[in-house]
Length: 195
Image (cartoon, rainbow, N blue to C red; front, side, top):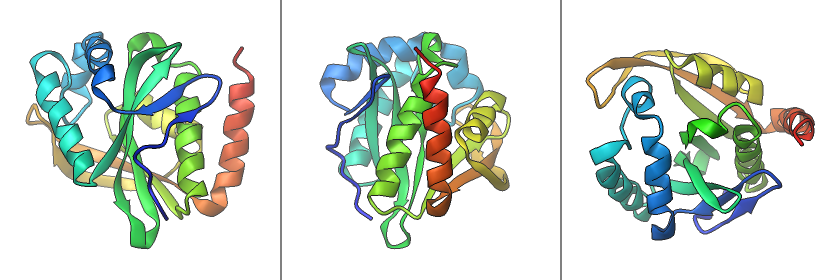
């Protein structure tokens, strides 16, 4: 399995571009559009004064090979972010996560289109397993991963402490390489329903 941090991925709904300074201010605006989601559902915050330190941390993690971050671009504007992380090259496994979209882009084609690109690339590059880690209280994200075709493997109890001090349980979902063709076809059919 290989992971290319410079790859641009695109379909008719979304373009995933490697993070650059050019995305910073539009991403800041997108993250500030829903400050409560960062307090309630994320293990870290990118709202307000937390944005710059997290931006720096994400770039540092990418430079160390810990994660690969993409700006989610719709109609030429950065409306969110997503990433590959926890990649385990010898075992051909990686995690898709760290995803946030401006509220105006939730519930439509953006998430399935972005995940279609990311999973397609991961499996095309030799992944055997793609993992999604979701806070157990995040009902919207849990439903979204199931709708994408992820299988719930279990719940890690008291898995992480969020930036607010809340101890969270984490749901682990996965899609395996031999499941990908059916998941891909389901995503393609779902995306065909969007104008």
